[in-house]
Amino acid sequence: MRGQVLQSHMECCNARPDPIAVCLLSLIFLLCGTAQAAEPESPPKVSVSAAAMKELQELAIQHNGRVKPFDSFAWETVDRLTGSARFRDEDPVNTILSIVAHPDAWQEVPLLSVPFGPLREALGLGRRTTHVSYNELISTRKLMRMLPPIVEKQQRSEKLTMLENETMELFDRFVIFTSLIKQELHLVPPSKSGQAWLPILPAEEWVGLISALREGNASSAQRAHELVQRLQATNPSLYPARWRLRLEVIYNHLGPFRIARLFYLLAAVLLLLFAVNVQWVRLPGIGIGLYGAALLIHATGILTRVVLGGRPPVSNFYETMLWLPFVGAVLALVFERIYRSGFFGFSGGILAAIVLLLADHLPLDPSISPVVAVLRSNLWLTIHVLTVVGSYAPIALATVLAHLYGWFFLAGGEQHPALPSLSRYLYRSIQVGVVLLSAGIMLGAVWANASWGRYWGWDPKETWALITLLWYLSVLHGRFAGWLKGVWMALCTIAGFFLLLMTYYGVSFYLVGLHSYAGGSAKPMPPLLIAYLLAEAAFIAWVALRAVNLRRQPV
Image 1 (cartoon, rainbow, N blue to C red):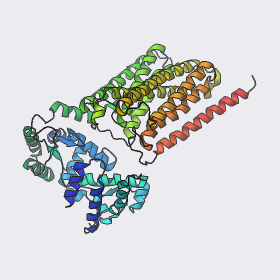
Image 2: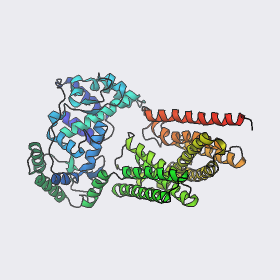
Image 3: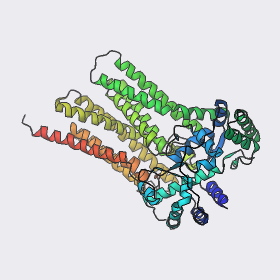
């Protein structure tokens, strides 16, 4: 009975638990005898040969609405369970196979991530205990007791608290782990297109492979090869091409965006040295060379995701954090070719490096997930999203330049020789951002009229995008009319970036609307974001106080 409930839950809803399934599963575990939680030991691991690993990495599996290599499934599942793509620095494929081969032992391992402090307290865990074992959740039964009231709120369409949302997230991890120990892996292609892939059990080849891995048998490579051949022969027309599976495995292990951000950072350092007149004739050439290499690797990574996903490169929040720095880096390179100062190259490089670093470390889903048909087939919507997200790039670029202006102002006052050039670069960047943001808003209005019969609906994203646009239009007009000069334009640019953050991040995760990724569900604000906002406010106050003091000094 428990297996049937879990299977129906996984098939019907891969992301958010079904309320009925939650209630049934909670009741079952409350009525079941408690499991005895043992002291966690080092879990048993399977030994996978290089040949077997290669075969298994490229094994096709249907997961979360997409057919992908087993390697991607393993990376995504381990990351979902533990909060990290690797568990104890082990290859994710090896971790998944170890769980499947030794389910009883792995049920004792603190594997399931519990990142939210109040939830740890509610479960009776220590304040520094960040992970809990499957058996501990069963034995204490505290998680299952917390679920029914949450389900009742969901049925009444009430907004969940942070604690309730995190409780459901932990339940998701519980269900995913259950599917692993029950070997509910959809590896068998269906007979007809459009049908769901079938579970691998009780396929003889799979059972033999797991037994060989469990026993450390040298025949595992041969068994893995036979399994792949058998699955391909089941329906060759539906089985993905080998090159596509291999390309995704290479993408997973190469990590193009990690390489790109390193090159961006090195290029930014060299171009800043060039901008501040460090005398070395090869400095700009090496800097631009590294910058170009980073841009090429960055573009290759985005193009690979487009090929693998068969959709535009901005279909989830993670992908917007790849597209935004790419547009910023391209624009910075164009400006650098025009002005040849080093400041644009530094700004584009440091912007791309920081955003790619955040994309890799923030709790975002990096998987190449499918999108609904309307987002995949509507050309105007795709252009609108690409344009709007792209418009954030020159504004972010201007914000970096504004920080440079502020630091040089603090160092040398209004007479610093770099300030006139930086003021002009700042102005040009904002101009491009305003043009792109205006175009993106208008394209969105056209698409909204075609979809919902209205051009404007005061959706939170629409409203905040308009506020951001009006702010930067005011900055441009203030500079043109002479109201904003020098350091005050730089400070207004930085202040406007708060509005851009609300438009880009805040609306997506904290407000309810058509553009919300989290549906307005309560989420803890990242400590890094809080620290940034406080540091930025302090920087603005510091520079503004310096400017006021200089103005008060006698000439």
